[in-house]
Length: 341
Ligand SMILES: NC(=O)c1ccc[n+]([C@@H]2O[C@H](COP(=O)([O-])OP(=O)(O)OC[C@H]3O[C@@H](n4cnc5c(N)ncnc54)[C@H](OP(=O)(O)O)[C@@H]3O)[C@@H](O)[C@H]2O)c1
Image 1 (cartoon, rainbow, N blue to C red):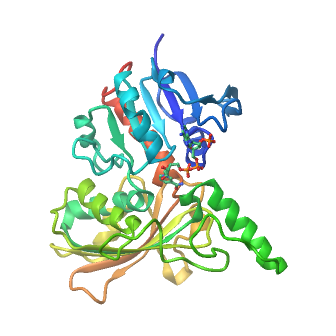
Image 2: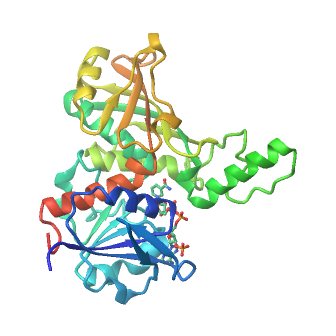
């Protein structure tokens, strides 16, 4: 028996299905793979590498003999099974917000802070989708010029809220076009032909939890000082896939547009798509289904002294979740930080 034993926890969800797509072309030597869900989907069939698998209801014993659990089943599910997973000797690569800010849990964007994986104690967290795409862009710029201040506004796709949210955008849009009434369920306000400046619940400081995830996770991943000024406004928009972000970043060291472009052109996982004369810049429908993070509209910011503004777009289900999850698993294997690697 050689290779790694995997379990995909939440295999029937939006992110879980995408994890399986990405895994099809992964370098991980897979010995076995298990598809786990709740009782609702147990018995359903899922195809992976041309073979049909029966989805199994998650119970603690399902983690015995598993080396890596790729989880996208929500924070409460991850919390419910983390002890069983660690006890079974597996590493949990978790997509939920359950453990991201815990001190002994590395929060990793593969290619940005792989070294942090070495301090794992059985759990590695995948950042929130809006933070994820930002990190591959900011890390190389921060290495060169040191981030002083960061302002982010997000335009987030409904797929970030799961399958039910995608179904609601489609159904609501059709209802609006036909002039029929529609009862909003998956969102706090109507989403069709609208946008919603609230993602997740509000915190005491007037920011939403989603906005504070960008603030706190960015500091943790880039190892920024706790008092680094970062602000975020997160908005849900009627787009199916790909989050867009208007980003303004002020630096300690001088950094002009040409150097920014040069750095980003060489950056891991990033593609510069920036030619305004020919109306070339990234959009959500263009980036959907693609792996890289695309950056356009790179310009000198007019409000801050030594700052760059840009537009960052990426598939939230790929780099924001599934792709990074699989890349983390690949790194764990490459760096021999899991059993059977
Ligand atoms: N969508 C994104 O862009 C994105 C990005 C980053 C992180 N995430 C995170 O990833 C997680 C999943 O998101 P999603 O969009 O894929 O949601 P989703 O489409 O609703 O899928 C949820 C999955 O979790 C399973 N599940 C739910 N409760 C369970 C339980 N008690 N035990 C075992 N399995 C259970 C579901 O199984 P059933 O089929 O049986 O219900 C389903 O497979 C969330 O934590 C979300 O915050 C999502």
